[in-house]
Length: 360
Image (cartoon, rainbow, N blue to C red; front, side, top):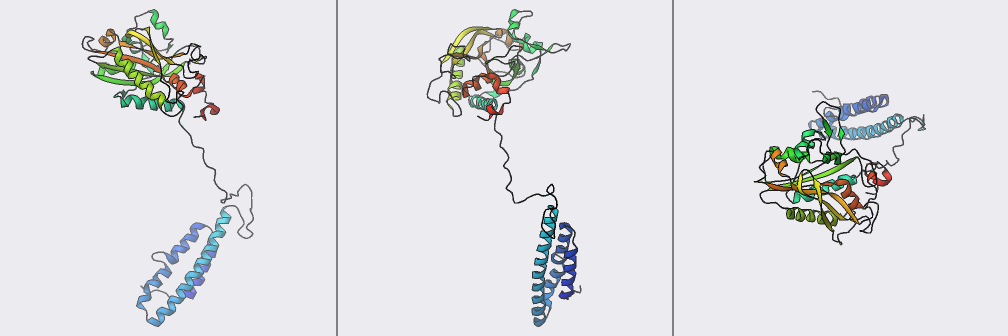
């Protein structure tokens, strides 16, 4: 291959090509034409070792001069094209149109970083604590059949107990409901899994009821279930006590700050799916037990219900209640969040008010 070494001619051609470039893409093609792998100047430099010493010195000096010329011309043209692209005149440097002008020297605006919702933070902490105690996290459907929501959980037909769960019924022939609790998942799980077992079931539950500072028509419930050969209410008391201890002693809004012991109160109650049944309350951490609208001025906040799984529930799941026993509980994640962060209005949690959410 014959390499042309007339660098004066190449200089004229390169100058013409650089000036004639209409955009950065064309300008880069000129750069490739002379300095690419098979570029004109590249080939000349490769051929230097085949020349005599005198000619090699002469051509090498000219090639170096060509490189300096090309770099200056290329940089000048590139700046001109860049300014023109940003809406400025290549000749004057003045902005042609304020609408087209982009000042690339202005520092960019930092995007605002989001953060977790307090309900999400609480849910993750609850799951971490129970998983550390050997509980698995299980999920289920928000829309349930009457069987799983009521019948399998020992709610007799037309029994007044059903009225305690103000239900959203769907207009469907098979009597579907928005689940009133996450307890149906324990039935679904026991149908397909043999004991012993430990699970918690976080998820939305829906109640057709009026809202106030401590009640809402939608809530997140944490259902818990533990089944084995020899399980008693004492096991529940120990586990739930350990849970509250860890939950309220961790950093991030604890009203107790990890210094004050959380008092737990169990009182007799009634739930069709447990026997015996009891409600679980703790000292109000919003007011410190002194009395406020959250605790209805009595110093205690009901966190949920619990009890020993009713034998009929085991039978409906295909398990023999003589062989197995266990406890079940259901806590409101919203209430836990309110106690954790000393929130005195449950409706704030789903208000979408950034003045509230930015505090977390």
